[in-house]
Length: 217
Image (cartoon, rainbow, N blue to C red; front, side, top):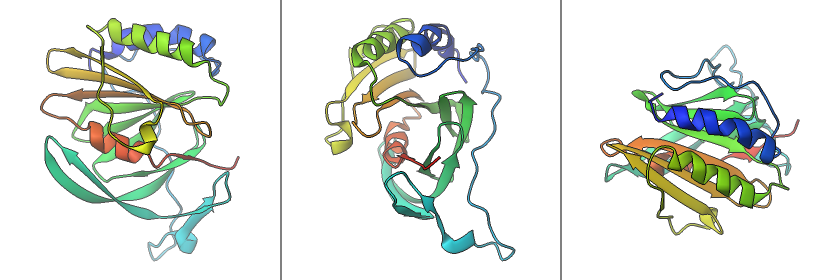
């Protein structure tokens, strides 16, 4: 992970208490990728096929297929790839992840989706409780961004996923840090994207984040 992680690691200590998202000992991960374990994928049979061809039911009782095509753009280039369903035991959800990316558990209540070619380009994923106090989360998120540089309102795609969302970003040299608060009643999210001017993976990260779905415990 890049140097911009340091202020986020420091400020996020207080966020765990004010947001009601749980608490855990924090570790400064400013200069390296987190010590983490990959999330689990569906078990495969001896012939290499996914067992049963489908995963378990989510909280709404829906069955998710094992792969899904995702269209997105990176640095202006339009792309489409097949993403595969991954399970996350750290925050108990599933999502579709494209082959160029890796989903790992970072610490309790936080995961990271890394670009395999450069792990300083990544998205932090935080599932929030339904009764989250948005004013406190907004204040903390803005403080995290302000520790890096000047904070400005970020452009939001015209997509139902961003309905009532809060979006701010900052820059430091060629590095861009964008924070999205997704105010979805069923599954509120905080997404923090660390990208670069010559490696703008924000749309790819967002398209994958849109597939996050809580699983049955």
